[in-house]
Figure 1 (cartoon, rainbow, N blue to C red):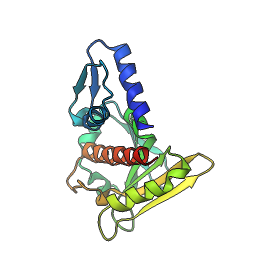
Figure 2: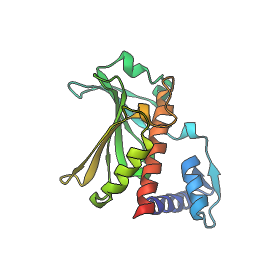
Figure 3: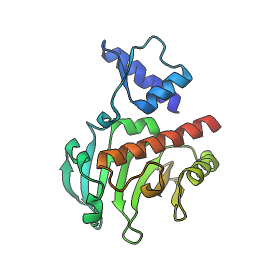
Length: 198
């Protein structure tokens, strides 16, 4: 799962570039721990650059229509933008999400609880439910910490919703970019846990 995807990424990068393979912190630590580098020349890139090529839409919650297609400069907006625009949600895609078995992420403020809710589809087999639940129970902190994890037989993936507020490292004054990086880190650890437990 994670191992195969990172190995494929390294091989693809080696084939298309003579300058070496660019990784970010999570992948670099994983590669070093699992000794996957082989003869690849690896470089660690600053985490803030991970989503420079992300596809970002601001959408209306009620209609789900796109309001505006944003550039990566939108990632420097404060996360609190969503509290000022409660009628909107952010739809987010990046090639890096494939590493953690996710196609896209939606982020919005919950109308009732005021939490920053993360919604996504996770491509992990149904049999891993106990590992997923154990990780989420252990890693989402706080009395109100909650998540929804429902398997869709139709899509063959887990519909996962959780409040970013209860993820370690969350800060109200984060930027959008920092929030999506925290979500990515959380998902990376989740998929790593599933891989270790299978």
